[in-house]
Length: 248
Ligand SMILES: [Zn+2]
Image (cartoon, rainbow, N blue to C red; front, side):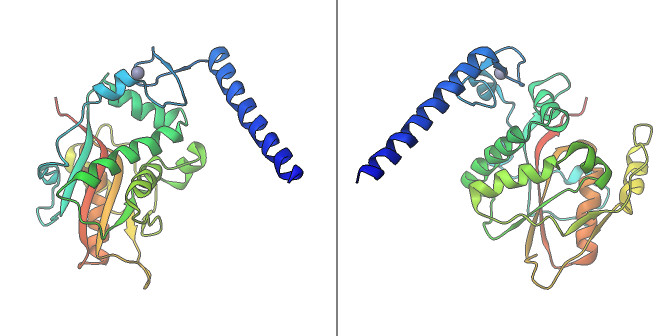
């Protein structure tokens, strides 16, 4: 009995010390919100309350959105096609994506994935029997960054919905050439051979949801979806991205 009391007291002491240590760290090294770059984050928050309220959310999860107009192949039919946020140059979504991709803020990627998961839970469009497939990044980039942000977003969604993530289906074969000076169709051509899909006998591929961080021209997502469809024509396909760029 005495031993149990001592053990309990030690655990309590450790917890209190950790809390005090965390509060002290917050005072000495305040974390600044990556969304607005001004408010101090408290209690391990990843975005400040003001930014959370100001997120430029789409209504894609409530009404049937359609990214198909971005695609060159009219045969690509998607069951669901949604983005959580609108992306504007200089806006909060750009700050969030920058933090996720270049500042190694993996927790924020997971958190944003969980926000998508929460939207999906409430969405009349969502069919639970699905597998999440993140868009892969090239191994060289993976080595530099240390993680794939689309995988982390997918893992966040998975935590909320309890549906699996399959990182093995899609494979990026080579670096695409720089796309900045290419037109829309050239970009798609350039990516056509980059992605390949492979399935094992145990892979559940009745409904695959492609996950990406941001959709701009749609070329990368279309290329991934086409690669899956080419290998498995029976797959039901959907697309979910954290953000969608507004044209103009
Ligand atoms: Zn903020």
